[in-house]
Length: 140
Image (cartoon, rainbow, N blue to C red; front, side, top):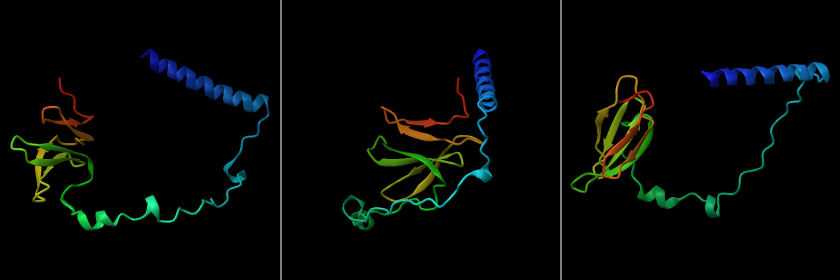
């Protein structure tokens, strides 16, 4: 509670000093109409050579998995199960953690975090567990 009062006091003081400085120093307030706004001239992008060249290796050696089946993923983690099979876990906007089998491309609804939940991140734990970051749920 004291922090809120402190923030309010500092903010109010900053606004008061700003207004007082404009009045005492007669600093004109610049209106949007008075500003000289022109086009933004940016430098040309570097040529697509060297480190900026398109990576053709990726184009020929990568396949898409889960295309259209993983709605707005926030994060992904790779974890091997007890048999050694690798799975990808995706935290999705709809509250589902999706499990993807990279070898077959199969996507399954693995765990639903909850109605209105939105898992923001997933990570592999030290012992093969999946750690999920969901800021709206609190467990005691």
